[in-house]
Length: 216
Image 1 (cartoon, rainbow, N blue to C red):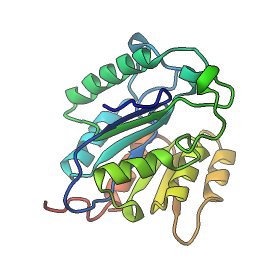
Image 2: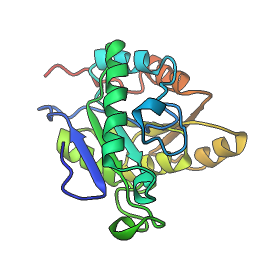
Image 3: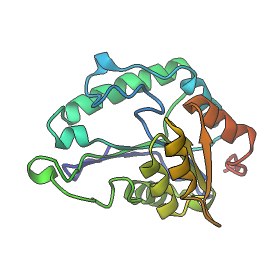
Image 4: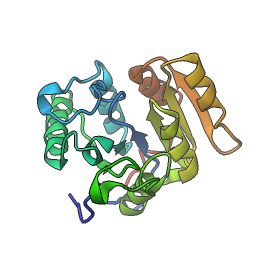
């Protein structure tokens, strides 16, 4: 774990000799239920079926990397200790399904934060691509073949800005779906799913991450 910056968190696995595509995931609303500023392990609730889907990605040797905005820290709702406790609980829950994360990056900076954490549009805060780019640099990832799954258009916007192949939005409304689809372009594919499990299974079944299981 590296936390040389008070507003940033970075845990990265060892880089492979050959660059591989990765699966980037938002945390709240994709892996765990979004309980509005989740800062206590006791409040953690996993989304059913997601751990098993992540385990399938692990089996395919697809690096799974979480990139999450954590403005609750900047707002004083919880601190990095709370974030750490939630991460530990989530890691334990994933392990029960034989799943693991290859990287975790978090940005606490926010324009309405307190003190030194009051930073507007920090390069790491989605929709900016900083977390994705940092993961790619640290883990030797091929962003041009990587995907992101999130429940906000800012997740997909970060993916597009980082040069990913595409993104899947778990849409809460038709309007959100339309906003996400507007991000699509010649180099960025956008898909919409009803829930996180459908999004992950859809990516696996469609071979969107083909080539990830490269023999080292």
